[in-house]
Each structure stands twice: as structure tokens, then as C-alpha cells.
Length: 322
Image (tube, rainbow, N blue to C red; front, side, top):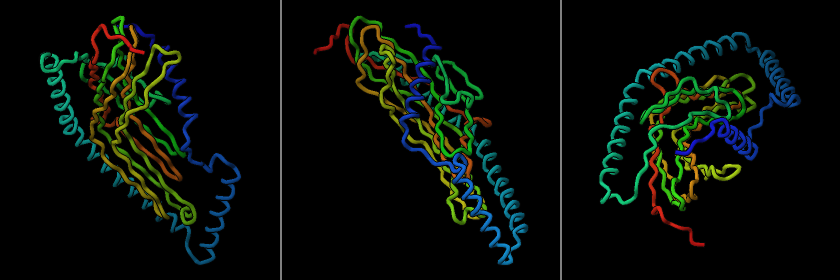
């Protein structure tokens, strides 16, 4: 197996992630970052509050009711989260059984060569687990055969953002000839998404909302190129949640207990070429007077990537025809 410099890999991935963020076209405007917009919004809030007072509305009592409502809403949502954490071991048991079945199937295919003509290479643990653009979303992780996982938590009230947890596997073409491969990856996630939109007087004339979603993705990096290049990501959505508020706060949450099988096909690898296989769990969010949470950290919550399988489609003496 080829050796690879982890520090060099991280530098290359950081550069690629920066380029991706620069090219990202979906940018949400945050009034808090623009003083003039913020000043106009605050003036509108003052005008509305003064209108309430002139109409005889007790704004202090209304504000107190809103705080009580928000506190009760948090209590209800926290109870739902606690229930989801209690159910997590059952979901993990189901996922683990599926992984054991997949592992046994791979062993059977590898043993039955006349039935399955293409040699299989099983990559049963990543050489790196890493997150970008913020690596500190990872609170814990483990690397072991058929049981590699990480715990992450993403929580933000920023206008928009994107986080990616990646499991990196390595395969090199040991021959002096070109090789065509197919690659399949497995990823599972157990956790919870929550979107909270904050109410208030300004919600009567401006939109208050929050959304968060997660997905699995898979890409192959041509590490023989400088700089390294990645294929387009194969993506499978897992779950998402959106909530919008009026005067009262609104909060919505959804449990996530899903798995994905992701494939890349007909990938050409040159002689002695090194392929980095990235299996990722992505979280995206947006807020306007809101807060988004992706909790894959509490209790038995986690993201797992047990295996990547590489199928060699060509013989060791194949040549490229120009």
C-alpha cells in the first residue's frame, strides 16, 4: 500500500474546500453584517412597538407571555430529543446488523471467484477522519475494521453554512498498467436535526425562519494529479427540516436513522496511481432570526463508515488505447 503524507493531504483538501466555498452561489444575506440594513430594521421594530403602546397593548405582558411560550417550547423539544436519544441504541442495533450482513456478503463474494469474476479489495477502515471547514465539530471518533465512526455537532445562528465530516480511504494501483475500478461505500447516520425560528415584533413584517439538512456523499480523488482533483460527488439526501415563525417562536425537529450505499463507476487509474476515496456526511443550514442544530453526538448518536469496496474491472496487463 502506498504511503501518503497526511499533512499534505489536509493542505490539499483545505485548498479544495476554499475553492468550493468561493464558487458557492447560494449565499444568504445577513442583515446583521450590514449596518444600514440593521439600522432600518431596528427603526421598524421601534415604530411597531410604539404603535402597540398607542393602541393600548401591554407590550411588557406580551413580552412576558412570549418568554413563557419560548421556555415551554424548549421543554417540549428537549423532551423529544431525550426520547430520540433513548431510541438510538435500537437504531444502532439495526445498523450494526446490516453492517455485519454486508461484511459476511463481501467474504462470500471474495471466496466465490468463479461466480464473481472481478477481484475485490475491501478497505475496512479509513486512514483519516476529518471535518471541514471546521474540524472542531468532531467531539469523538474511532477507527477500527468495519466499525469506524465519529460524533459531530453543528449548531449555528449564522445566515448560512456548510459542514462536512469525511472518512478518507486509500487505494493504489500496484501494477505497471492502467486499471479501471468501480468503488462502493457505506455510510450511516443516527441523530437529530432541529430548526428553531425566533418570533418577535419584527416577524410581523420580515421573514423569520431556520432550516437544516444532511446527506451522504462519495467522491474519488486522483492523487497523482497536482493539485489533486476530485470527481463530482455522488449524493444521497438523508433528511431536512424547515421552520418559520410569526410572533411566537417555532421549533421543529426530526430524527435521523438512515444508511446509504454510494457508488462510483468506471474510474481509470494510471500505473502506480494513488486514489483517495472520500465518504462524507454533509450538513447545510440557513437562518433568518433562527438557530439550526444537527446533533449526531448525544448518547448513541453517531455517523459511521464501515467499509469501501473496490472492484478491479481490468486485467493486470491492460493498456490504454488512444
